[in-house]
Image 1 (cartoon, rainbow, N blue to C red):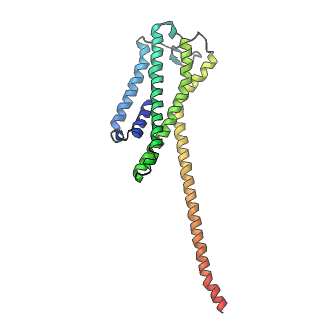
Image 2 (cartoon, rainbow, N blue to C red):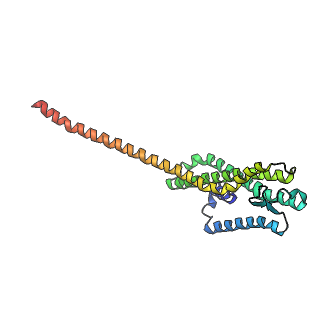
Image 3 (cartoon, rainbow, N blue to C red):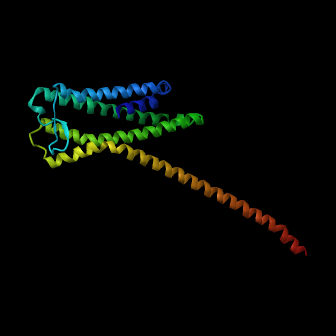
Length: 231
């Protein structure tokens, strides 16, 4: 999500980077994301932090509950919270705030460009809106889990009842299914808008053709009436 927000920020706020970013840069970013995630996932395996079952015993997670027993556990919890939640969330927030300011300041300027540039800008903005929704869903899903984990790591033992801890866990683990739903909703909205435009266009064409048909009929019947009067 952080890399996506940075990509949107560079392409919207710094237009000179748009043509510079190529396909191989995308693969480099993907490789960095996997290496970054693998680094933090393997740290408990080498002694920095620990893994343990969830309180309800159906899945495995970081050992938040015993982290306060050792300095190593506390430093790992603080490090992973900062580098895997606070820092990415800050970058995401900064990127989209700057995009909003840029769009507001350049809306009049874009209107003077040719159609191709405006279409490219509109496409980038649509992609940015989708990315914003995905990032918002990701943060909404994981922030409650992070709060519960911090309270469990640095608060009193058993300060959070097990039934209460289930809800943030399920919300966080279900975040993977949000993206298809968001894409489907956005696509449905675009499809409905396109369908409405086509219907309105057909209605306008029907009214126009009906107007010309009625006008032609009136013109054709007028000479006939004049001829009947003369007779």
